[in-house]
Length: 315
Picture 1 (spheres, rainbow, N blue to C red):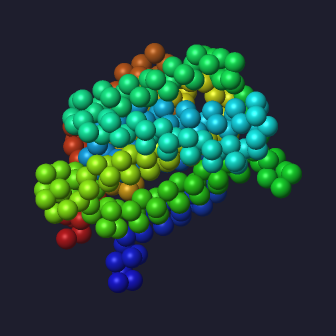
Picture 2 (cartoon, helix red, strand yellow; picture 1 turned 90 degrees about the vertical axis):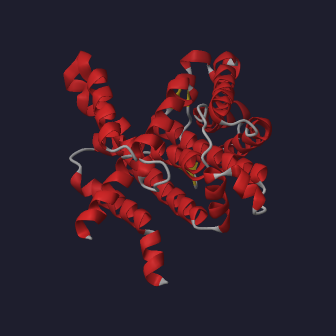
């Protein structure tokens, strides 16, 4: 039993060890900031991975929930006088409420109909954030007040690095617990066959709605962290269509269903553009070629494919 638990939580332990070791290896705080961005987007992608990899439901508008979480921590303190932490919790609650209201009708759809419906939800949220300029600053965005805890502002790249890293590890542990719970087994049954899941007594609609709301909560928390780390947000940087595409690309590239998959996918899509800036006009072309090569050579995704090859060599 202990051995099983250790292997189950091994990805979280590896992530925690890497988070604690990186500050002693990286040469400057710039790299810590890049690592913080990896943690933030990995957290959002992890919620989407539960929806896509565990339950088999596609969402092309998930960045909209990131935008809700990000703007909650900006609008609350700026316009309403609400402290940052309650504003962040309100953003998560609002994201869950929106996911619940939207999910009830759209999760009855399947395939590309579901993808287009979720895309519409994401675009709708982004349009609201763009057009309500008196609250959000419009396309130019708005500044985010510093987080204050116990009358002391939370500042510093290294501080936010650890905050984002701990949030990611907690998100991983929750995802692992869900995966191996009865609810996780029910979601996997739905992914394999909704008809068979209904036959054995699983409430398909309820389970799909639950994981959709949970994935929205992950995205909202990630959005709040993104706002705090950057200090300034815009609708495009938090809830734009391309951001949603990036999130789903992180999940697929890293490996759907794998706990470390979103982390690997986020690392590729965050770090590679930074590393390829030396190529100037060719960086996007090279990034596209690298992603194509990864998907051709590692069709299951980066983490599952490498794990399978490691097991073959050690068998």
